[in-house]
Length: 158
Image (tube, rainbow, N blue to C red; front, side):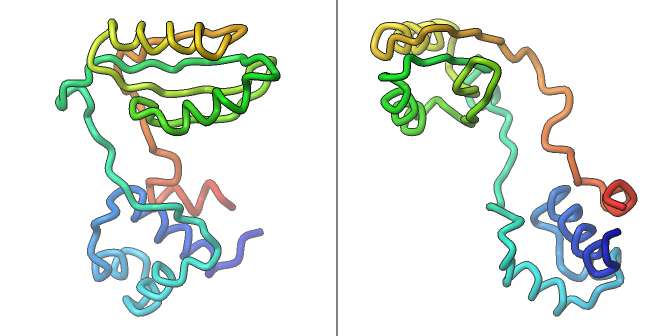
């Protein structure tokens, strides 16, 4: 069972997930917590729950119309070099370590399908990727919604 204070903290997180620029006075009115408590909770963040505050961007409107999820299985000897390459590559938006015979899932953002194909070719040749699967992202249907509804956040966590 989650303690009452933890439910209130989850509600604050949900408000921030929905709108990280929300005024503390608004969150205070919605949660019933004093502004000072919310401020200290955000400032302290000693539990490391909020990794960073960011914006969700419509990449297509910036000229990056091609997005894909790329699932990769690397050779044992090439795994570390592949990881370092993916970590530094400007077109890799998100990177995950995964299981079921694969090593990484990368979300790539590119200006064109041609740019994506060049990237994939480089992975195959330079890093001798054993297996890869590519899934083109056609449209965002739901993105970054978990724990973003303050009303449902406390109910779901109990």
